[in-house]
Length: 454
Image (tube, rainbow, N blue to C red; front, side):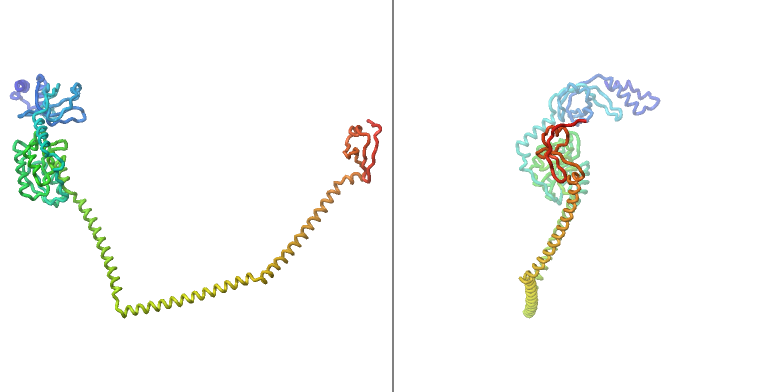
């Protein structure tokens, strides 16, 4: 039906002007889009889910495959999480991605039919080998820290060997690399990998083996999901590290191997040291050893000198002892001289102290202090007497100036009652019967008989 529609829409034999690729793809897309929707079943592989929310995968069976696009707007009523190996039935229309000219199925509906045959076989083999103990951690062999020879089991024409070679050249170019070529894809891959592994064991030259291949579809990696290969890996006396596909790809060989790396490059990195780190470590070790050797040499030299000094000739030792005696004699003489000088100085100090504290000297000193104090007191007394006489004369003048007798002498009189209380007003005088009148020479008592008013 599709071929008929294309022949009708694209009469290429009758064209007078060549078409551009864009025009061709547009006509093909329009023709494919006019076809009715189809129901197709198959197994999911190469599943990708970008941030846009669209889902892209390959729908395949045992003989063919087709690209599929399931846009986000068509996924709203589905909650099942898709994964590799699921067997599904889809309702789709045929479309064309014009920029690349790839035809694909545009998914309208999707129904799960169960897990695909490859995935079921993988899980079944994984369960059986795990029950046999091939995955147990206690059987894992450690990788050598400084492998001298690395065995590489992979395709000689694949991308994995280039990636691994680049990493080994950069990190650890000292290692010798032996390639054991094998087919890593197709139905003959398991047998080829087993033979390469047996060859590496028989050769017995490699310190570690890298079992690797580049990325690919789920079925492209199926050669590493083989029971005989798993048994050979488990029985291999040489440590094996796998680097099959991409980081998300996992095979039976990864579970059996001693170490699993996410990629071929990572496998090469995990089984080799970094030459820069080794150089730094060697330089540190060299300098440390050099310092220790220098320190030991200095200690040995010093010890030798000590032994040499102890192994002297008796004559030299006698001369040395005589010099030591002379030195001690000089030290003793100097010590006695110093002590004698010190005692003399101490005696002078005691004599000076006795002279300062002699009774005669103290009496003379105290007598002088007493005479000086007496003189000073006499001067102070005279000064106080003069100051007191001056103040008395001043106070006498003030008292004389303020004396009421002076006022009375000018003809005034002071009137008081008989109790010496002053009478200052005529009204106060009327309340008395007798008054005392004080003159400057004496006082008289007067009797009040009558009062006069102006």
